[in-house]
Length: 192
Image (cartoon, rainbow, N blue to C red; front, side):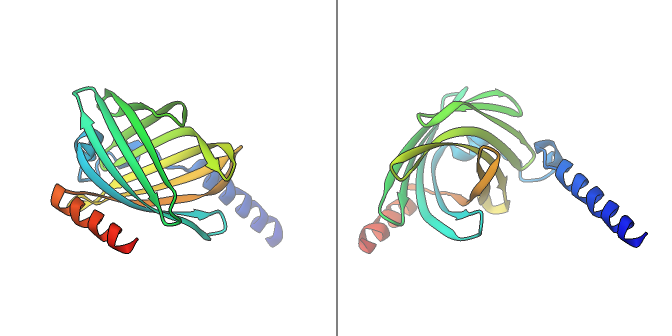
């Protein structure tokens, strides 16, 4: 009897755990309000890391981002510097559809990225051709960004392939002015 109850309880818990997932609307009342084109217009810097599904840190990187907004499209020019010396670049073209919806494209993105924002949160979902060694994998990103007081933007993305989680990317974004950017670049050159 106790065994049957525990089994039913665990199955029920598993089912409710699987069906409960975050939605951007869950954050509609959260502040500060995250407006993608306002936050990323100008210069932004991000620090990130990739952990595999076992929790092992695999990569660390820094991203310099230049954003321009023309009233309907946000262009993000992202330059990646990885701790192992690799460099990469991605240029996003993100169109604002309405108050809560964005659609974006970039060279390594398959199709169109879909974004929805409410309150301080943005959920950004897309498929990407990811370079892995000498090959390219088609992976899915489920990307969540949360704007914090003081202008810090926290980002956690789950990366999966064929429905299996490969790992997570964690990023912290900060808006920077020209003087701060010059200081960061001088530190980077001194470390090399």
